[in-house]
Length: 215
Image 1 (spheres, rainbow, N blue to C red):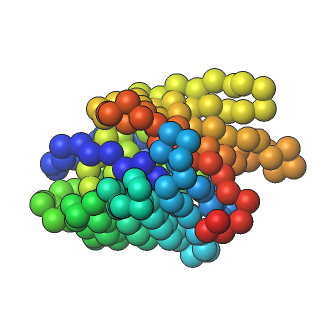
Image 2 (cartoon, rainbow, N blue to C red):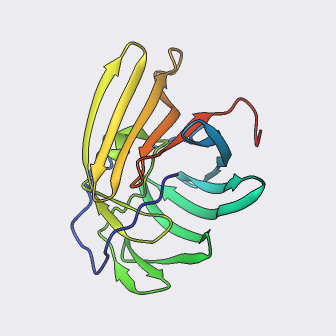
């Protein structure tokens, strides 16, 4: 999951709380190979399990960029999210981005999330959502929570159809992401298949659906 920074503070009324339009379901487990341009650098897996009226997500990412056998960039990220009624009810995460460390914890206060990072504590609106790539319709919120930094990112969204592919584009401060989904004809659900993110240095981070876990 691409995790992008934003200046944060006490945030309220930023996120669309329309939670009734989409019925809650348990997403399919997702396994991605991660590429920098066309070179494989790691993996990112999303594992889901059922809880009362929702699901738990365990996300784990590991990237390494090597040149001549020497590691120049190392990224490790783990997060646990609890979702109910299409809203984020809890998040715990830890990240080591090439030596820069981040952590997030949360407390549910009157249906709002109190987010604590290594820098600050703030309160979100009543229905908070992270970068919920696996639930494409929920991406059309006014702001999404960064599960690495704990910051909220205001976004612009657009979508188009290209044959059987549903393509959603997200843009905002330091965000330039294209997501590809393929509709399951039996269920009618859109399955996340790829992510393309343009980086500040002009390179591209690519997520490509893997056929088997961790390979």
